[in-house]
Amino acid sequence: MIKKIKFLHLMPDSIYTVDYINKINHIYINEEHLFIIYRYDLTKKRNYYFPNIIVTDRINVILFIKMILLTFKAKKVFFHSLFLHKKELFGFAILSRFQKKKYLWFVWGGDLINECEMEKRIYGFMIQKRIKKRCRTTIIRNLDTIITAADSDYIYAKKNYKINSKYMHAFYAYVLPTSPNIMHIEKNRKSTNLLVGHSANSADCHIEVYNLVKKCGFKGEVFSILSYDGNEDYISNVIKYGNRMFGERYHPILKWMSREDYFSFLSQIDVAIFISELQLAIGNIFNMLYLGVKIFASSYNGVCPHLRKEGAIIYSTKDINGYELDTKLSDEQIGNNREIILKICSDEYFQEKWNPIFYS
View (cartoon, one colour):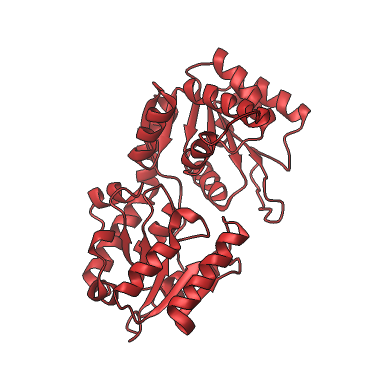
């Protein structure tokens, strides 16, 4: 298999990694793709069954040397996010200077904006952080192509890293709900279930949204998923504020759910608000549009402008008021959004986006 490798993929262990590999191996020639998956959260180990996958809890010296040799053999090397450790960043910073026109970066969101904003706060004798910043900057400036689901990510990278890389638009592979029990839930409850944000990330601006919802006189149930991607102090403050604002109508979700349980939870949601202007919650937005959830999102929220161009009905956060929060999507609107998401998640659409990336 190594002899035929054309595309080397470096990826963190994630549910989206599983879906992407399954899609690639379903559509393309397996022997041309090799996936090296590194785990950064050992409490959530996922299973991979294809022979063109190498999984490691940590990239050791032997594997790193093997990776270096593979970069010379591969036609293209893909960074699926840049959540690499300092050692790997240092190695690829050197390699990228001598292997230009070979490296591509699929931006996941936080690996661009969150990391860049943290780099701006480096000062004094933070030697290790300065080295990491220099390595990341070197890699990014030597990229051939940046791939994102949001035009705003490329604009941000170009502004902050002074890059000349090509830009290509593509979505990842997303799995949609298929269970009949989930798909046929009727949204005819008298009360409205509202979801604020998608994680415990402060970029979801939970408290700001709670204030807005309260000001609109919303009387339904308020949910927030706080089970991942946040620190304890922020989560604690959000919960205290939510309880104070909504009392028994406030439901913080603190337990990690399986995919099936999560789909079931989303199917009970009527309205969701994503006020952040960053690229966040793409998979969540896809699934909620498919399940008939009415979404309010910032006009600058990474993926939403593209979905609106495709014809998806996504409301602006400027439209939030008491009436709109209590008004659910019509059957016609739900059908429209579902059709668009089915198209975007199809094999044909995936190939339309990824073929030029692989073969141009």
